[in-house]
Every structure is written in structure tokens, then in C-alpha cells.
Length: 293
Image 1 (tube, helix red, strand yellow):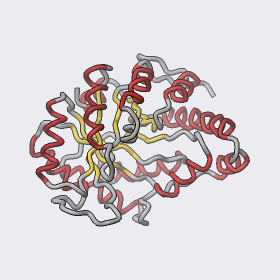
Image 2 (cartoon, rainbow, N blue to C red; image 1 turned 90 degrees about the vertical axis):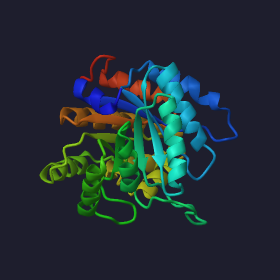
Image 3 (cartoon, rainbow, N blue to C red; image 1 turned 180 degrees about the vertical axis):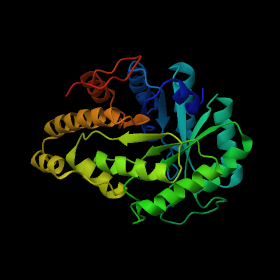
């Protein structure tokens, strides 16, 4: 089923993101995680795409596992900056053969040695190309705090308008810790007439140094109160994880109370922590009630 169809029947949505194991790890290492995430009854699970390395071939295999073995809708990431049109057609054809109906269309980061052969410059070019086939439900990325390259919110909303015009059906945001940024962003989208569903990306903190690296790359702001606690537990991952889960529970509860279209949890392939967050929120397999805080 296409994600837009699921959204029409079951708002707000709950989804997870996983990434393929590195090439030197057996692909089976992700299967146990998928089984545990399946038991949490997400509406879909997305699989990242390692365009610069050897994991991109595993994206199709894992997406197929999610769809055909775990019986959960799969969203396959696809980046275009290093690909020719023929390569994109080959990859999308493999996804189609596996019954995958949903693609997250991304530009991707150019490799350090140069992009090589590519027929696509921006995500909107990939979206337009995929839309011509008319077979996929197409998602795109959104950056509520602007992009790491300094692109501000106004320019980002302009990019989103271009993606919608090209055929994007929904958006998933970059990780955000400050909900006020999200609410302001959604208000601006409404003013510009962008009505496509926007699912909010939430990344629980599991390790202080790891989240510092990720937020630096993503251009995301960490709240001062949270960052002070992370500094305190910089050498204690267990305590940092507890702080991160506490914060994620409060953040998601507030997002749901404000009626967002959905929560997209960046699991970092950690099912246990995702289960704990949902347990504390009081979420069930049939609904997403807001926990009493």
C-alpha cells in the first residue's frame, strides 16, 4: 500500500528508519531488529541508501524483507547524485519487482572525488523522473531548521514547493529537537499552500559524542537544557541514553498533542530503545494516544 493511502486511513502515522549493515557484516544482523520493530506495529519502515559505499544494494534486499516477510510497508531511500538515468531505472525496476511502492527520493552527498556520471542534479529531478512512471508513492526530505549549507527556511520552503510540483507526495523532516522550530515551519508551509503530509523526524540520543557529530552534520540545534545533561554524561553512554529516551518521550508527546501528521523515529537499528519510548508514551498497535505527562 502507498504511504499516502495509509495516511488517509490512519493519521497520525508511526514509522521507523533503519540502515543496512556495512558490507563486512552479514545482512542477517538487521533481520532480528526488523522482527522486533515489526512487533511495534509501525505504519512503515524506511531503509537508508548508502550511495557512496557498498550498502546500496542491500537497501532493496532489506526493503523486500520488510515488505514481503515482515508484512510492513517499506520505504526505500534512493539518492541520485552519482547515478545515471539507466542506473536509476535499474534500481527502481528492482524495487518494483519486489513489490515496493514507496521511494524516498533524495539528492545525496557528492563523493569527495567528484560526482562522476549523473543525469540528476537535485532531488526534484529524481522525483520528476520517478513520477513519469506513475507507479511509486514518492517522499522527499524537509529541513525545518534550514540546511547545513546555510540555506534558510524561506529557501527550503521554495525547494519543497519545487518538489511538490515535480510530484512529491509527502515529506519526512531531518531530525529536530526543538518542537517550536517544527511548529513555526509547519505554519509557514501552510501559508505557502503546501498541504502534503509532513512526518517529523525524531532521533533519540544514545551517545553524547555520536549525537554531537550527527547534529553538526545535520545543522540541528540541541536545546541548552538537553545539551547540559549530555555534557554531564559525555563519558557515560548508559546515562546519556536514559536522558535521550526521557527527552524523546516528552518531545513526541508534545508533537502528537499538536496534531502532527506522523512521527518518524530514527532508530539507529536499536529496537529495544524504540520499544521503551513507545511503552512510556502508552502507544498501542491500533492507535497513538498521547501519554499523560
